[in-house]
Length: 126
Image (cartoon, rainbow, N blue to C red; front, top):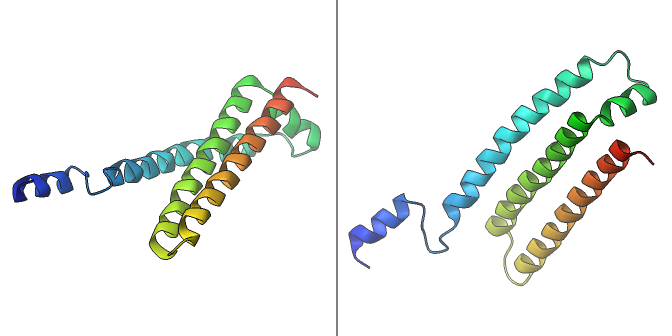
């Protein structure tokens, strides 16, 4: 590969792993999603008449609210996974790195699945 081709590949975000730009872009997109969904969540909670169990439960059981809550939970888990992955890749060395990445991925996947299932249970009723 010529020097100009190497320079171009660095500018295009295609370094040695060919995925750095994608990871960076996904972090930014999930952050934007969290900003929008977080604003919706806070505004929705502020507009509730009270914060009793029945009021919050009926709000969360609505189809639109349950869908947006599930998106919020899944996006938060994805964004967290991306951030933790960067920290592990930057600061963890040796055999612990791949093990940490696997454990982190499993924990984030389980957290996302449990969150979405809990929201679905609320939306669909017990």
